[in-house]
View 1 (cartoon, rainbow, N blue to C red):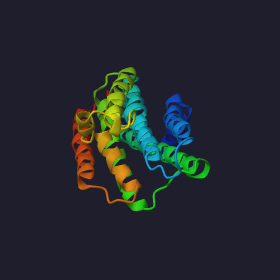
View 2 (spheres, rainbow, N blue to C red):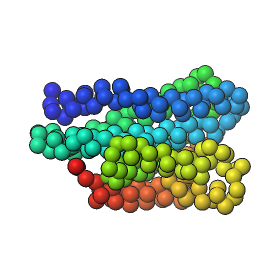
View 3 (cartoon, one colour):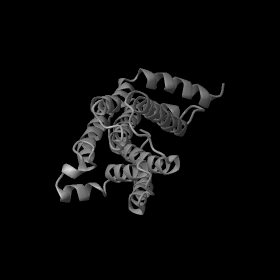
View 4 (cartoon, rainbow, N blue to C red):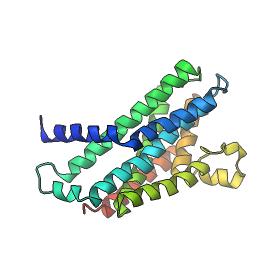
Length: 234
């Protein structure tokens, strides 16, 4: 087994034992089950919202907290003296977070379609495109938090502080139609709001409007560049 494979195996075990992993999977599922139990079968809002919540929790909370904790404990610095470079750890962590998100999404799709009878998207490609762009943007923000936070606890706090206003503006806490028009409009330009808007359009079979996709791509590129420049190994 290569050093990279051994690292992936160890990190997988640690991720499975991390309570935050379970929280990131169960909270969106709980949201879906509670509200989906009384939802109409033609509902096209709840499942995209649940998927967006999962992306936000993993990107804003789990990913930055893990990476900042590793730097705080000197793990990244010590790894720089071994054949397993710190960059390999970042790569493994990103891959594992994507796998965790895929598992959370698959679970929601199975429960929504199999148990709750909610509508599933008819077109896979538009949904996959928006989901990939939204995930990239939220993970970029998570990497920036990890780059700037001095400790894992600080990263956790920053992620939580960002999540709630972003979730509100995106219409994940209160439906956008029930929000003040000005706030709902502002929310469409936030990363999570653009994600929800684009995903909602793709879910109903529409071609997503260009603006949410452009915003998500721009957020991904710009924030990733800032995170790479600011990231510290120790």
